Image 1 (cartoon, rainbow, N blue to C red):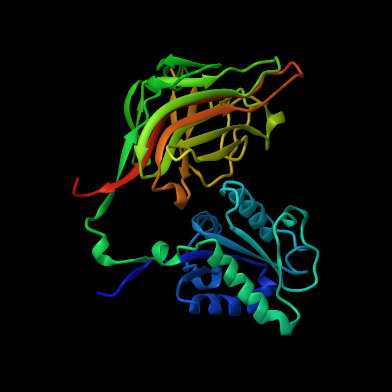
Image 2: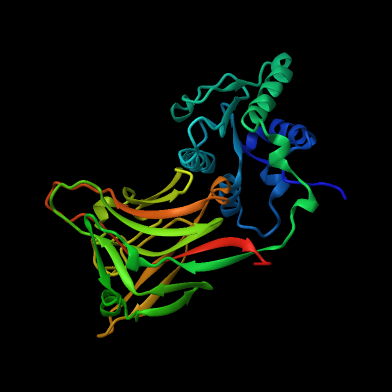
Length: 364
């Protein structure tokens, strides 16, 4: 039987004006046989949401090649947005991992955020071959067990795998400086009764709420720990909002979700007001943040509380990077990282429910 290959996923980030030379490098990398390069004109299908597909490709990548030129470093628009997104993903990578590789296509200035990474000069013409070999060596050196990582024999996959969902019980939450309450506030504010619910085909159980306190006093970041064990996690889903989301915090990080694994590794996901978390319960107030931009927020539970007040909470989806999907989650931390000394209230983080999607053998 022929071997089934899992190739090294490499995203190619570039300005459209540099497409000809980037396309040629795409072809060379693709010809290596163990690299699966991602280039928009080669991978995007007609009708796809290209911005969403690019973000998904970056998150799934084992490495990102950032092509720098006078076109890309001076051009405003999506290429700069793409760079910011890549840098955000790079922040989650383990220390020492070669993930972001800058390549200069001409004598341009390296943007300040990229100065920490060693770059390769892919010019002048006579140096291209040496630069290409250095690039391939960088990809290969970061994955020394290439044959073990990439080549998977069909005989070594004994059973089909299926994905399943499991609710994360908030009754186990530990709050050294947060609060846990039985499921009553959501009913009083949003009309959501305790019990089993489904949103976007994602099941969740609402029994308790966990939240950090708003405060007009300086305080250390408040953390709520939820002990929870699941093997081979793929995605995490949270019904979440920022309470008292003052507009002055728009665009600021107000908290983070930290997933801890049995391997002593951790994955951090920042909560940025107006990007992936907002104030739903006070959506009619002029000081509330009631907009959101991240594709991670796929839907919102919207309901009416007694008295007719309309409210809701967002369904936040966090796709775990590939390197964490064969791990064991041992706990999830919800951290409120906002500090305020001005006399106004800080945004608090409210969590109503959480669900994990994981992979298991169909034969179990």
